Image (tube, rainbow, N blue to C red):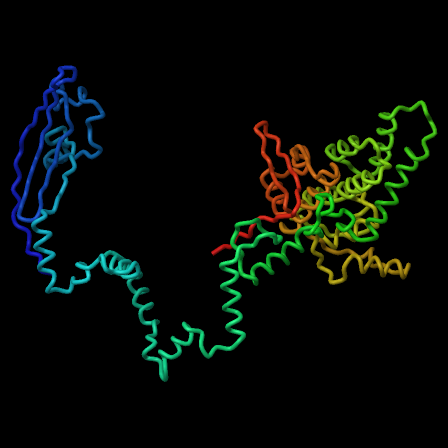
Length: 478
C-alpha cells in the first residue's frame, strides 16, 4: 500500500507541577510519558494529584483520581506453590495513551497512494452515498455482508447489454413516449395522489398528504366494517351515528316496544298529582332497569334525563338500553375462557338475560361462529317453521381481538349518544372502569371513530364528536 514499516519508538518521562496563581487551590503534580517515531506521537498522563497527596498510599488517594483499569504482576514460587501478586508503580493503575498520526505522514501517504489501488480513498468527497457505504463495508464489514454486496452487484443489469434497443426502452419510460393510455393514466393518477392534499374529504384533515387510492379504498372498507354505520356528510354531530342502525330491525323493534311500555306504565299513565318530578323520574328509571344487569354509568345517564317523553330523549333512552345489552354481551365473553362459548343461542340469551330478539343480532355482528348458517337466518327459519330446532343446536362462538374492539367502540359511541345531542361526555373514566379496560385503549378506539379526546389535569378524560367528521390519518407501515 506504499506505507513504510514502523520504526522504533522512544519514550521519555517527566513530572509536571502546576502552581496556583491565586493561592486558593493547592499545587498539583502530574506525571507524563511521551513517545514518538516517524509516523505517530504517543502521550500518557496520570491524574492531577495535589502535592500533599502521597501517590503510593492507596488510602490517601481519592477515588476521583483512580483510573478504572489496574494491573498486577504475578510471581509463582514452585517451592512453596504460592502465587504472589505485586502492584507496579502508581499502585498498578493503568493510564490511557493517546496516539496521533503525524500530519506529514498523512500527506506523504496520500501522495504515495496515487500510484496504488487506493485512488478511491483520495476522492471521497466525489463519491455518492452508495459508493461511500460500499467502501465502508469493503474496509470494515464482515464476510457475510461483503458477500451480499457482491450478490447485489451481480443482479444488476446494464441497460446497454439488453438485446435490441435498451436505450430506447429507457428513453421511452423517461419521456413517456409510445406508452399505452392506461399506463399514462396510472402514472398521472399516482402523481396526483402524491402532490395533491386532501382538503374536505373524509378520512384526514387539511394539510395531510393523501395516500394512494388503492390503500385509501382498503382503509375505507376496513373502517366501514369496524365502525357502526355513519353519515360522513352530516351537518350536526348527533346525526353522524344513528343507534337504530347499530342493530337489526328485530332488535331495535324489541327495544322500542320495551321502552315505550315502561314509559307509558310509569310516566304516560301517571294520574297521581302528588308525586313530584324527582319521584316520577326515579320510577321510570327503576322500571327500565328492572330487567337484566345494569352498570352504574348507564343508570346515571338515565337519571339525568328529566323529560323521557320528549322527542329527542326517547332515542337516548333506547340507546342506553341497547348499550346495556352490548355491555352484558361483552362482559360475558370477556369472562369466558379464551373468549369462546359453546352453546345454542337460546340458552346463551337466557344466561345473559338478553331479550331473545336482540341476541341473534349481537352474535352475528360481534362473534365468529363455527357454523355457516348465521343467527339471523336461524331466526327466520325458526319463525317460519315452529318445529325447527335451529336455535336449539349447539354451536361454538368466539370473539377475537378485532371483534372485541368493534364491540367496545359501539359501546363507547352509544354512551356518547345517550349523554345528549351535544355529543359530549365530561369523563369516560367510570364507564371504562366498569368495562375493565385501559383509558388509553378507549381513547384510541374513540379517535378511530372520529372523536376528539381531551385529557384534563385532574385525571378526567373528556370526549366530544364534532362535524365535519374527520378520521385520523392512516399509519402506513414500511
